[in-house]
Image 1 (tube, rainbow, N blue to C red):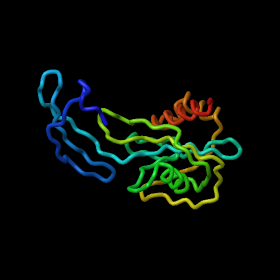
Image 2: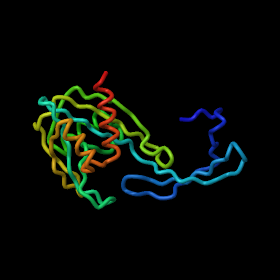
Image 3: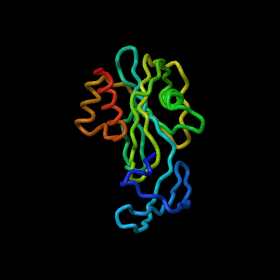
Image 4: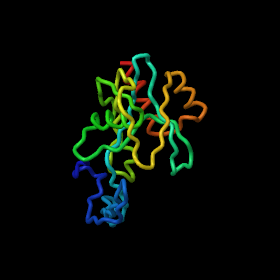
Length: 185
């Protein structure tokens, strides 16, 4: 949360709901400019926190998924991911999503990064969660509307998929960058 004494902060004058949808709500805020005092309206997407799961097998391969995404009308290659449910930690969500999407379970679940997906429009956080020693010992349980194909890739394959455009999911690429930086330490 911003420090109200910071001269860049626009004080919120009022706020009201502007729409409610399956995975997000829209809020309309009226904020006062600290520069000229004018009140301007802004729309905010209120969304649950998300996770991107970096799932590493004992053989050093990464568990990934392919699925159709209606927004881009493409089949995408991604890391397992999902919305953090009410009362759930990022680690719990990551373990649940990994198993639901791929049937893999692992141990040593650790948050290795946290970012704001789109601070201009959204109020949520994206957690990058590493799960080690992942094996296909669980049960897949896709959500309605999902059709997922699990796959495994080594680091060189992931880099090649990014380079040639097969892996273009922005949150996944951010997660990969966090993993690479974390793994150097």
